[in-house]
Image (cartoon, rainbow, N blue to C red; front, side, top):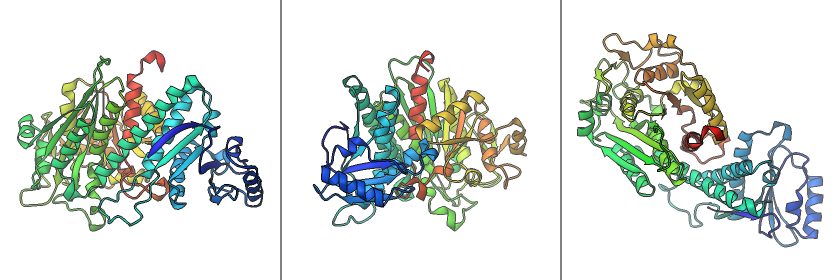
Length: 501
């Protein structure tokens, strides 16, 4: 999608105008219309008022210009979450109306107080436009008329000559964030047969070639040599050999310890010998969504030229049942030396993450963040609109809540009290991979398990609730792309001197 920034005085084609209930068409939109069309529109809206979140698509009689009016509901109920969804609704409505191009009248930018706020609003809008335009159609036969897509979108607002460069950069940055989010979604949407550990590693290498990211791939022999007994154990049942993906981007101006991002890369999860039920298994090619988010989160940070040092670690495996699979009751030795008592082979993600978190220690990290489609229990607790946030550091909890709100990758804190440690003590190994009360608090005991392998500032994100888009997300079916926007926001925060925060 080609996204352009234009002034509201510039004559354009078809218009997109979001309105609150009882709100008048803004003057900037009226200036685009002939007197005949203005009179027609005034009479039409007087008779057929904008209510709720309805959509009106009108072909104006004067110059055959189409105007798309989207209801924003009651202004009293407006919030930043609805603002993001509005942009996605615009894309959906344009496709329904068969509009390939449009001009979005952005009154809210002109009314925003500071240049930084204007830039943030334009960046978010550009990102959401790109994200909403994506659909995973590459396995379908292309229709004769092609897949519906938006070719060009103009963002019309007022800005000064001094502001122009900053706002153009904001739009370009939003496009980058949207593109990398969509790359993440594509990897997650790929069928398990076409996205094996080796192919996920190849995708990371390709992302590295397109950016300033160094990519190193460790094979099974190297993984064994490092002592990653968890990765080796989980991968034993599959003919697809494991890979350990290392991505590194270091800006020359950044002198502090690195941010380390760790992503779960289970490219297909059958549950192993503790086989998953039929209803749950067909989406398990998305169990590497955390790994995909790290791959393209690091790529986005590089493309945005954020002055930071970031490392991405992705243990990539398949969890399959076979005669060589690891068993319930097995004891696996992690890279840290701590042993893991396997009580359920379907709790494999935390086992491979334990090795990755142990490996992260060698970077003496400033902060480690892991992201994983780890537990269905997180979805039971929170639904499908927000990911679960775990940390023992109250300041990090507050920071990540804020970054989640500002980025659109929403997070909600869960308890990680010391008392829960009792639930994951092993009988024959140091740590059990499921809690003693497996039916209750599963996302908490999974996070507590991971905490046994860290010795640095750490945050765990269980993104299982936001793995796939739901109808209210106003996105195409399939992966949601959680993580990229959060990671870019985090990198910017860490790269900003404390005196400027």
